[in-house]
Amino acid sequence: MIEQVVGVLYTVTLALKVPVVLAVLLALAWSLFESGWLLREWLERRRATRIRANAPVPAEGLDDAGLLAWLASDAAPELLRR
Image (cartoon, rainbow, N blue to C red; front, top):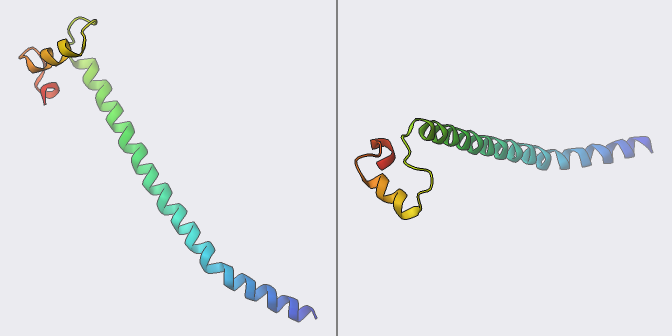
């Protein structure tokens, strides 16, 4: 009787092994993908903060059209005009 239970448990264990391993590999791939997005986002925000800190910004109250005109002028740094 116990040998039959052990046999059934062994069969169930073998049947679940492949899906569990696949799920773990998918979770690993997903976490690596998300970590890459997190790193990219962090680097972009860090770069944007550095640009904002070093850029000679005109008066604070510019509307969108005024800001676009300033960016198109020679007063804006080359990095910002790109």
